Length: 306
Image (cartoon, rainbow, N blue to C red; front, side, top):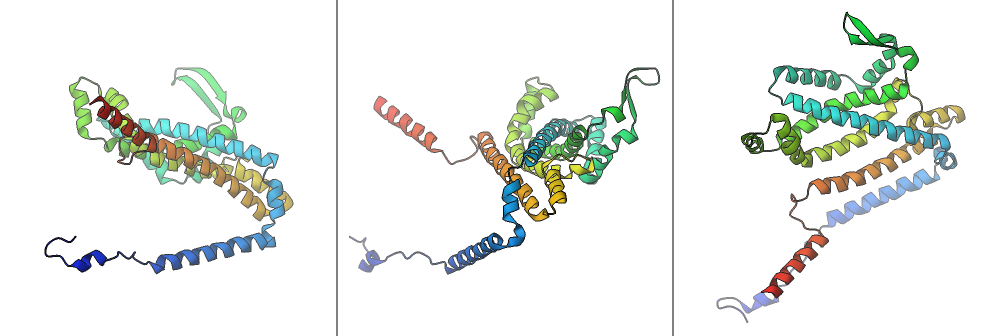
């Protein structure tokens, strides 16, 4: 039946989906180009896929993967810890702390990481001896830097100190995203400023801090290829480069290194996804299947109770 004043023909109208031929054409073009690229790469003898398969699981490549992952983990640990400290210093009411943090960021963000790694490689020449003690009075311990020099140690220290400058800005942005009312309420409860940061502000800022931090971890993984400036020659890229220098097959060895970088990056991206979802709880309007089932059970129980 139709409502008064409506035409009987209104019931015969059928909705027609909006046609979008541009999407289909673009998809077909992209798929064709992708197929041509894959086919061309597979049939191009210059890629030397047999050499690629031979060295993909080579022991030296495996050693390079381990060194690269270790460099990434240690450098990010230094970068995150020091970055949090620098961010808190930048937001501190103490002008000396603010100026010190700003100077650190100015130096490490204003110079290329490769140049910084070169300086760390020359650290033993710049400071042949280091001493700990009371300045101008007494030295307790004296180190000979020429004898204790380790490229691996100076590589992750250099990467970590550079990363701290960027992590400081990420953490500062996350802290600034928390409403000032949170800090004011903590102050009203008698909390000190460091306690407020540690127990109130930083936990809430993690939702903003985690996504760019995950990107920084992935970026750090690729930045480890620059540690040849220290010089460290046992990372993934250096191992592939050394092998190609012997067999004169640079293209398949570069593909080997790129493949393993992609594999490790993919694993890190999966971890980042779950970590972001963990800290985003309560922020998204979308409910998971488990949450929907729990909600349905709660509604059923409430109905049966009534």
